[in-house]
Image (cartoon, helix red, strand yellow):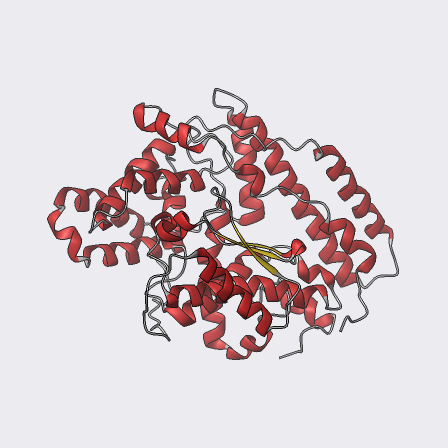
Length: 432
């Protein structure tokens, strides 16, 4: 049942301004860019970004500025709601500008230092910079896991190359992060390759929650990941080829599917609870919610398939290496990161079923999403939130397990004291 909303007069206007991150930052003509990169010695692939320019940029910006003024002048609304909305508007404006700057960067053939610096400043402001202590911890864990793998014993040169980089990273900073060792709650089972079976499993769980208005749809040939689209009430499932190959991840099994469904249902349920709460902003996310959202979703996923480390370690290491944390701030470009990731994937390969070249290229295309990879260190730090959030959520759950009761009330970060205080003042969360 819908409760009386505190923000109904502002919510729709804010929600309808789509900032374009990350969908507008997806490169087109991927296969031709990959072939060109493999065949050349270029520092980066020549990606073409067909959809990066936003023709409605000025219109969206004006809408947000007008909304900001209306909210600032309004005396009838709870001051906490006003504060949250004003901060969210600033976040959306920053994301719009991030896409705008990216469109300028990719339209130029040469390095534009000024625009590159602006992109880095904005991505660090919205998603945060790579944290040295988390980077160092991730390097230490990866180094230990890699050297323990039997497959690396016959590859001494590769091991030495990758290990030396990870050792440098692990020595960067001291860290007080508890290592994670979480057993799986379900036994491993058969491999799943049928898209229709995945769709049926998702649909069954949606119906268990009474969410009959949600649909599960097959993705087209370009769809390689699971995507939740709350406004359209849709979950998009990867195509069959992607389900079988999953970009370097392990094959999809019954247990992994259960875990993935648990992850995606966090996003679905938080949207549903948020849209019917007193604060509709919880349906799209409080300002700075992203790391907490993904941290909690991966936490729920890990309760099923277990975990020997926090989420997103490989990506976090790559982000730290790209910005040069391990070598005094000297950043790396696409080619340098590709070479390192290629060696890493070669080390892990044991049965010839995966192509280290394609895996490393795909990985780096995500790392340098929305920019020209010849700009060293200019990366989108969006996905570093997975690891940062996952570490914070595990720590919070261990110290105060009661948060499990309030994890699904909306898109917020229960490891963020400002979020907790705001929701307590609005009587959405109890004072614990």
